[in-house]
Image 1 (cartoon, rainbow, N blue to C red):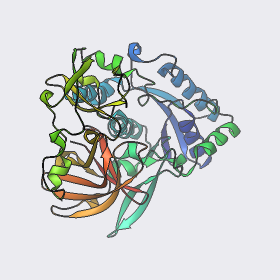
Image 2 (tube, rainbow, N blue to C red):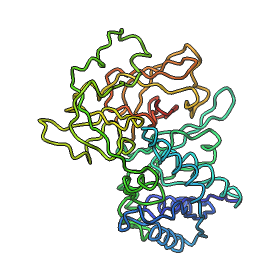
Image 3 (cartoon, one colour):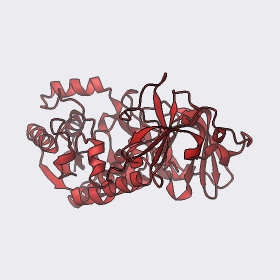
Length: 391
């Protein structure tokens, strides 16, 4: 009997081709569209609103001759993603909703809904691959990078568990984007030429300031420039002190000069240079720190400003996640990996140091804009081994 798989049809070309390939491979395929959002006031309506996406998903399902249904997950999405995002921004941190959406929605609530339909698997249009190996006589699932180096989305899946991976299929992970589009054209799929969505997962493009202002009210505050020679960057500790290397810089207003105003420290993120409306300097200005308690943002001039670069980061034990639990470091252990601190960043060599309170990641070269709330993910070759929330 053929295995049943529920495909998360988003109305885009990637998930459409995912459904097509699985049907060709002999699976019993069901298409399901996730409705995650009801508030159109913060979506940029001509950028793939959910209604158009839902219709496109339905047209593809009809063309493929597979059952189709929509599932409303907006309540869970609000509780697990949106409320978390607001809370993180309020604290001056920058969450990654796509990583969370995969962990909390697609491979949790959506997966459970699929299992109720008698599904063996769920499938998504991610550019990632699943591997299987045996470790000490036990089957272990690997999360591997997608074959297309420009589209690899393994980072977005960095919080998945062995249980979730055991139920996941990523049929387009072996393909290049150009091959996916070719398959869609040959199969006559309505989404073959559709532009890729840049928005929040299954929502569409959201105007983040408008989105945040629903809950986080504008509040005028000072923008303070910190000079490159500020004493905070030179506190005399040895470079081998891993705790020192991973500590975020702490600024105070006395360290710099007021150069303008902003609308609320909770709207801004480390490394940001757009939307600040502060000019007249020889080089671009970047945010190097935010203080939501004092409602102050700290800025530095130029990409080479020392406040924008750090050698390391810390992940508290509670936020540590090993896709491969069999490779989890024990207290006192260390291991070399390649890591990235944001999607699309190239992998950088680093050493993970495990301590009782968490993981310290020390990079060979200082990293730009290490941002609290984002996810760091570490790899061995093509395999994503683990991840965690940056403190």
